[in-house]
Amino acid sequence: AQKVTQAQTEISVVEKEDVTLDCVYETRDTTYYLFWYKQPPSGELVFLIRRNSFDEQNEISGRYSWNFQKSTSSFNFTITASQVVDSAVYFCACRWGGFKTIFGAGTRLFVKA
Amino acid sequence: NAGVTQTPKFQVLKTGQSMTLQCAQDMNHEYMSWYRQDPGMGLRLIHYSVGAGITDQGEVPNGYNVSRSTTEDFPLRLLSAAPSQTSVYFCASSSTSGYSSYNEQFFGPGTRLTVL
Image (cartoon, rainbow over all chains, first blue to last red; front, top):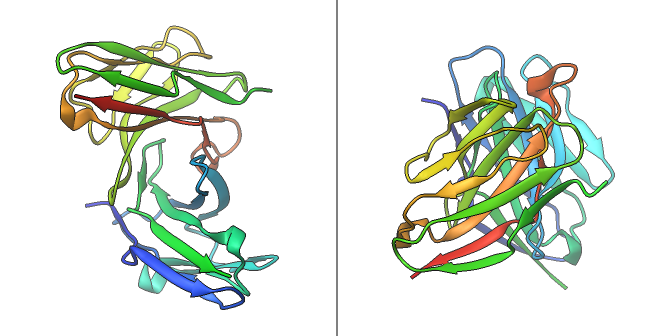
């Protein structure tokens, strides 16, 4: 079965702490696409990053970084020096060719000042 | 560009009523989809469309109908509302240009539906 698991339901950190959000996917396909989206308290969904199954290169964008490891079927997201504005629900998603996209249940991140 | 728009923002229905949630996009995206978001369950795909006249079922299609007569619009119809359909509904679109499965989705602001 194709599945995306975000085992952390809620995480609470203090500002300036680093935090890693886990994402594990299950698939038998060799071609797939991984995404992270952010949903701030205002409710909209915002795209953060995408990665295809052939590109295991990690990515850093400012305080955000993503670690894609095919060996463990994981696509984890790290926020360095977290800020209050990072408080949101973060969703990991996977698309297995075509356009059907499966989302994880989301991780709610609280960053306290 | 308005992006993806959804109406209404809020709706309260009684069990058994029908209604249509509207979704429109002005980005000329071929792919459009409807999700519902429930606490602890993430976003679940209801129906999707890869172009005008083409629709298909997602993970949770029961109780919902869609049609796609134009590229811009993708309405979601609730045939006979049930309390289990209380949820936040998101419409999304993405481009089919280039490596289409790799394109991110753009989401509307959502419709919060309560069925009593």
